[in-house]
Amino acid sequence: MDIQVHTEHEVIAIDADSHSILVRDLARRKDYHHHFDHLLIATGSKPVRPPLPGIEASNIHHVNSLDGGIALKRSLDQQRPQSAVIVGGGYIGLEMAEAFVLHGMKVRLIQRGEQLMSATLDRQTAELVADSLRRHGVDVQLGQSVTGFDSNNGIATGVITDQETFPADIVLLGLGVEPNSDLAAAAGIPLGANRAIAVDRRQRTRRADIWAAGDCAESYHLVSRRSVHAALGTIANKQGKIAGINLAGKKAEFPGIVGTAVSKFMDTEIGSTGLPERTLNELGIQFVSAVVEARTLPRYYPGSSPLTVKLLAEPESKRLLGGQIVGGPGAAKRIDPLAVALHAGFTLDDLLYLDFGYAPPFSGVWEPFVIAARQALKQV
Image 1 (spheres, rainbow, N blue to C red):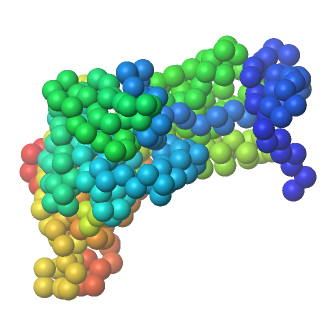
Image 2: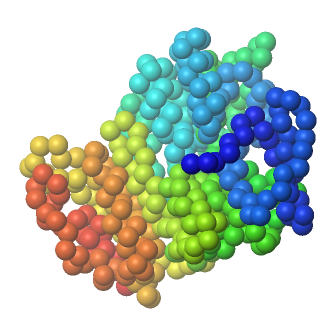
Image 3: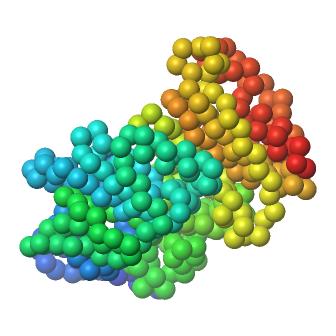
């Protein structure tokens, strides 16, 4: 496609005024300036690694990059660890807990807060996830803060919390990510939510001819109606598409996000979209909620499994604010119609009589979130 690719080159500075970047050729160990007409910053995110004592031990891993995943896999193959401690109870923590369990390891997960997945789930749905971990042998430790790591000859032997020390052959950090925006900030490019690069709907920064997309850039949240930082691959791909269209001379705008994400741990699937209670409280948004216990398929049909749905809505306008689903196989992707509803600005009333497909191999007559909408309406 006639695209010049320079590997082993690092951009170490951006001069927005002169439209140039300072590039370091790592192989030849020399620097040079390169002019640009337009510049796209797509530096992604970096894992959160707090400066705790012992954190530089060789068997403390993260999987927020390909290199990190390769290093972890190498450690598992060569060292054959028998026990793992995961620090952090978000999506990465859950998915790596599954991987370690399937590896036949003894797994412990430490979460600073009083529930798992606090950024996306509420207490009721998070407890279902924690129950699933415990059911598969994971020791879930909530309400403990990691203060450091015991080590011997550069190898971590234990994870120290504010309450006790847990032995470990290998440690996985799942503390989330932060935007890799230092290069932009040093160039005087304004930052926004959570130090992500501030962009408009076209992915353009506040400096002429400089654009940003992906995990390093902020997004507009359609429910909170505020700029946020959401490091999700789905969002990064869409922002990259929008930036590319605009850089190619056409016009496109990224309408915004609702924060939809899915995950799983063993036989438990998790889906969420919109805003959870904690965020609504922080923003001062009034809400009502309804929780419904249902099933993925009719009870009599083979393969039916439990399913819990939670909906949140504004009491006065009845505007849908968020949804969460936790259940067996077939549960997580049922969050997608709720994501569409959030994009469309649906109210609880709008959900009641949507024309969904029905047959026993796929669903019950009434979608569980429709039943939850009815329950929420009773409160308003």
